[in-house]
Image (cartoon, rainbow, N blue to C red; front, side, top):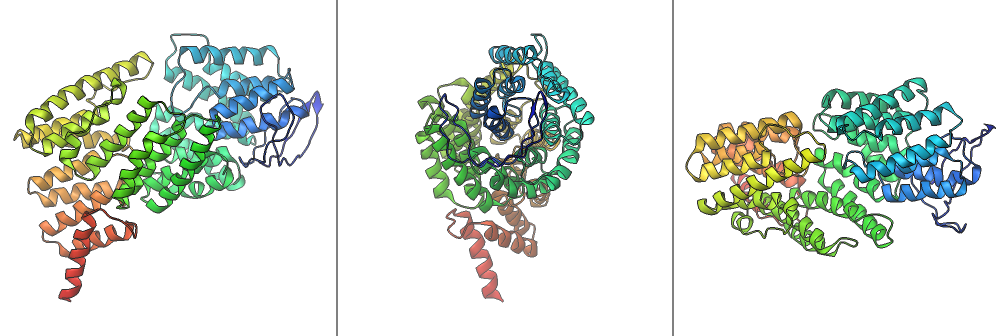
Length: 537
């Protein structure tokens, strides 16, 4: 990692120090191998000997490598007992923005770090501003909601950003806080636009800053913004190649844009790096399983069934993951694979994980699989089980401080819709799937799931309404370009409606996005149709 550092020690000293090694977060001083984590510029008042660990902590924080970041900041406090900003860093490494919210015990630990930072009385207004923002978030008030803490943090960073607009790291952290508010459903579109407006010019000016590129990807991780994040996506892994999360994150944009080969390459690299990091006890297993989740989806969309199946088995070999945790992750992959591949009987027979918190994907797939197999009794039972699991999920969300919509959950609506169809109530099925699709349109479709509007298209095809189905598939492809099943559905709907020109276009696109070694049987349909057309000519 090569970083320019401006060090303040009593009086302001201006140093530009290229770092090719960082010291390991241990008590000895032997140099660790060079790490490439990006370029950060973080002026502070700590001693020069603490700078490598401190700057490493900031770079790791930008790439959400939280465990390693916390270790680096703690190493900085060992090297300089008066380094207040290192305690700020340790506190911020406990706040996993965009992933999960700190529980009570973690909030207490974070507050202790903040209080230690405050006690050391950082001498510069800049450092005081960072610590004040952390203090706003970790405020000792059990009644504060997630949104209130996130808002207070963001407002404090807004002051720091406006007071020092040239502070790249402060601007990046402020933009991330806006994305965090968007994720909490606080002015989602407006806050993303504000974040993008901050990050895009910063990315042009500081193309090797890991936080700027990373947060721009997150800010644009919605269908309507994804194209704006493509440059950052293609740069981030090169900026911080020693971060497994940096290797994975570009695939968020690649997935949104249907760039399956780039997503596959990104997540193969991330999976290997995360596995190595877990084996070295430098990070948790979820870095690997998250990358595998995106890899499975990309394999499916590029027509590679065998590789998706093999990935399911690999879930049981993730280092650092417990046996039940492995089974839970495999259950999610198996549920996705069965539905994406339209293996309805397989979906209906999926094994339900032991832990209730991990059962929703399985009961969702089982209910839809049973309904589409014509097994009404089993579908009804699984819908009832899914209803219980969703109620439990939403209850837990409320108790941990998350807001829960009064609207019925999308997965439950989808399962109920296919049950209604199996029971012969097609109007109810259409109504439920339209409601689920409209909700997804408002909130944004999750990037690695089957869209509800695609299910609506499938239902309309079952009901012999190809023109209506065509409109549903077209809408899906606007938000999720190059989805295999949406392209296939659009081709089949076009044929059923007598539009052979559009059918040819969709089948051609289907083969274009498929991997050369793709083995999904649906691709034979496209090849057969296009081959027949060529023979007619």
